[in-house]
Image: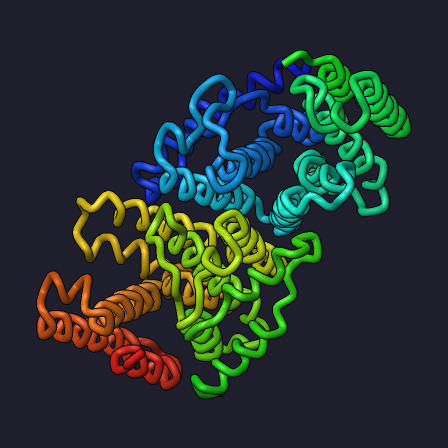
Length: 253
Length: 253
C-alpha cells in the first residue's frame, strides 16, 4: 500500500504527462496551465481505491477526471462575470494570462476531457458518478451566488460533491455493493466540509465571518473527528485515508 | 419507420419534458430556455437509429445529449467575450436574458447534463463518441477564433463534429461493427458541411464571402450530392435520411 505522498507523486506525474485531445489545438497550453495545485481529490480517489484493493494505476483516469472537473470549475469561477479573480496559486488565472474567451473555452475543454477520461472505462457507472458530482457542484455555485442558502448547504453541493466523486468512482471500480457505500460517502462529505472550513480559516472569510476564528476551528475539528470515526467503521486498512484527514485538518496553505 | 416530421415531434416532446438534475436548482429555467430550435441533430440520431433497427425511444437519450451539447456551445458562443450576440432564434440570448454569470453556468450545466444522459446507457462507447465530438467542436471554435485555418477545416471540426456524433451514437446503439461505419461517418460529415454552407447562404457571410453566392450554392449542392451518394452505398432503408438531406439543402430558415 502506497503512502499519501507516493500517491501524490503518481498523480503529479500523470498531470505533467497529461495529453489533451489533439483536436483541441492551441487550447492544450491553457488547459495544462490550469491543472495543478494540491491534487487532494485525485489522491483521495487513489487512496480509497487502494484501501479497497483497486490498483492506483487503474483508478488514475478517474482520479485525473475529478481533478479536471475541479480545474474547470476554478477556471470558470475566476472569470470576470463570476468571482473576477486575477491570481490563483500565486500565478495569473487563465483569463488573466490567456484572455477571457480562451478561459471560457479552456474550462469547457477541461470538462469534456474529464468525461473522455472516464469514458475509457467500460463501466458507465463511473461516468454517472462524475456527471452527478459535476451537476451538484454547478448547482452549488448557483446557490452560492443567490446568497440565500445556509453556508453548510452550499458547501455540501459546491465543495463536498468533488470529494464524494473520487470516493464514489473508487467504490465503483472496486465493485463495492450499494449497501456498503454509505459510510464511505459520509466520510467523503465530512472531508469536503473539513477542506472548506480550513480554507475559510486560512483565508479569514466564510465560516470565520459566520462563527469567528474559534468557532470555525471547532467546526473543522468536528468534521475531522467525524471523518475519523467513519473510517473506523470500515473493515479495511484506512491508514492512508487517516493521514489525508490529518493533513487536511492541519494544512497551512 | 417514422417520417422525419414524426421523429421531430418525438424530439420536441422530449425537449419540452426535459427534467434537469434537481441539484441545478434555479439553473433549470435558463437551461430549458436555451434548448430548442430546429432539432436537426437529434432527428438525425433517431433517423440513423431507425434505419439500423434501433428504436427511436432507445436512441432518444443520445439524441437529446447531442442537442444539449449543441445548446451548450451556442450559450457560450453568444457570450460577450466570444461572439457577443444578444439575439438567437428571435429571442434574447441566455446572457442577455439571465446575465453573463448565469449564462456561463448554464452552458456548463448543459454539458454536464448531456453526459448524464448518455451515462444512462450501459455502454461507455456512447460517452466516448459524445466526448470526442465535444472536444472536436471546442477545438474548432478555437481554430475559428485564431483565424488562420481554412474555412473548410474549421467547419469539419466546429460544425461537422456535432453531425457525426448523433450518427456515431446510433451506430454504437445498433452494434454496428467499426468496419461498417466509414460511409455513415462520411455521410454525417457531408451533412454537417451542407448545413454550414446553407447557414452562410442564409446569413450572407462565411462561404458566401469566400466564394460568392453562386459559388456557395454550388458547394452546398456538391455536399448534398455526396451525402445522397453515400446513402446509396448503404444497404438499408435510408429514405428518411434522404429527406433530411433535402430539407437541409433547401431550407430557408
